[in-house]
Length: 388
Image: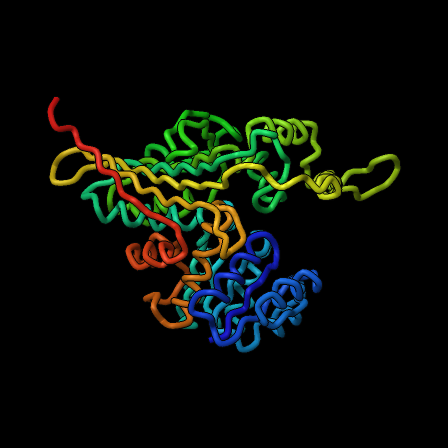
């Protein structure tokens, strides 16, 4: 089994550690545009490093040659060219999500993957990923599904640290782009960071605010559960893993236009991309690591009917920091799932060719059991009205 791991950043490091510590594949090649970063992650485990530029098909093809499966942990903007590279290489594919709109474009490659006898699993981190598997599981437990709402929460640093838990570029997209929701059977846009509510996450997070965000779960779950009559689906997150104070600082910078990706002329200098400048400045600040317990809770709530009566089901997947993986709970629940399913793809344990969301192809119980091997716990809560 040869696994091509693309991306050696925050999440790629954890994917590599998972591949090294559990059911180690025969070969793993870690690719990144930054050769030093690829070498550092690969060298930690005796994997093969590679410099790869996904914008150059020749570079991508050389990197993917001989791969059985591609784990794409790079920026979601490159998902389509990497998928096309996987097709050329005859490799299965898994990524971390496409922030709704890219995911919808990726689904259009279904027939090509079917014809090639290959499988692509879209959005298999935590959210999207674990939450999608939750949704598929909950759908099977109900005769009719009215709604699926996903809540993503974590303990945060009370000192308002600006250290980002995953790609800061993606976080700025989530801050500025309108979320998509599915309501009354229709997809619609709403305001960024809107519709805050208090949600009871598992302790030690507790009751915390959660707001809407653009996410890939909403792109596929309404399609996958259409046969169950689903009418509503949305995704809410607790400030992207920041404290509220830190998130408000980033939101203010974005409101000034500093998260804009359109080139500007600044002081007579053409081609300045405000977000590029802002991200570079934030990286130069070298924020201190967050000082908190690093606990994560992914809660998926489905309401519907079973045996003719209303029922509310809730699945929670929770994680504390992992000493073995050297990461907080919020990071391991993103990095471990694609490593698990990459092995399954290479071994032929994911049935059916084509482009699939996790809720349509990942078997829930074996998946939960693999997460449990890594210290990640999943629990189910059922609520009924007994009288009234």
